[in-house]
Amino acid sequence: MRPMTEIDQTPDSSEAPYQRRIRSFVLRQGRLTKGQERALQTAWPTFGIEYTDQALDVNQAFGRTESKKILEIGFGMGDATAKIAQTLPDCDFLAVEVHTPGVGSLLKLMQEGDIHNIRIIQHDAVEVLQNMLADGSLDGVHIFFPDPWHKKRHHKRRLIQAEFVKLLCTKLKAGAYIHVATDWQEYAEWVLEVLQGEPQLQNTASDYAEKPSYRPLTKFENRGLKLGHGVWDLVFKRV
Image (cartoon, rainbow, N blue to C red; front, side, top):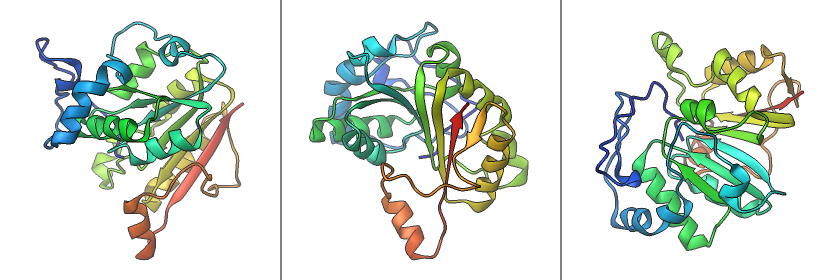
């Protein structure tokens, strides 16, 4: 689940939405499996939302108004997103990812699990936030295992920056939360400092939070824990 930044969006207008390639030096598309391609063909028209520069009516997108709306940024291959959506059926998840095989994988999981409370936008999350989401429209944001860009010269590419967090806060309702999880300690310290520096946010813990029950352990995370690697969850609320 490595959310990508600094995206160059240059789709071929002749391609269908799920076929478009978002070209960036940080993006590796990989090959589509037959199952992913089939899911893109059959499920995208129902669960995919094409990026536009106009505000999205999230209640209309999900067909209900009473549910909490959670933005998931960079869902990777979608395993955790699908499990969370099944665990929290009364919530709706707007999942944003640039990686085409990941989009296909999540759509396939949704079909297999009969999951209907996810919608997918294949685009840069920053532009989605800026142009598609109304202020105060979100009950939560999930950012799980973003790319840590561990080399110091690459820190400017990290998704979690003060300006980005300020943008997120404008989209959150009062009392809504931001949940970040990372397996890179230095990045956890970075994220903690950035989130603590935003006056619109309040930490729900003294520093790092216990893993919320809704976030499943990924295969990657389980492997790391067995090797003694740490995982840090940060949960901040909009005041």
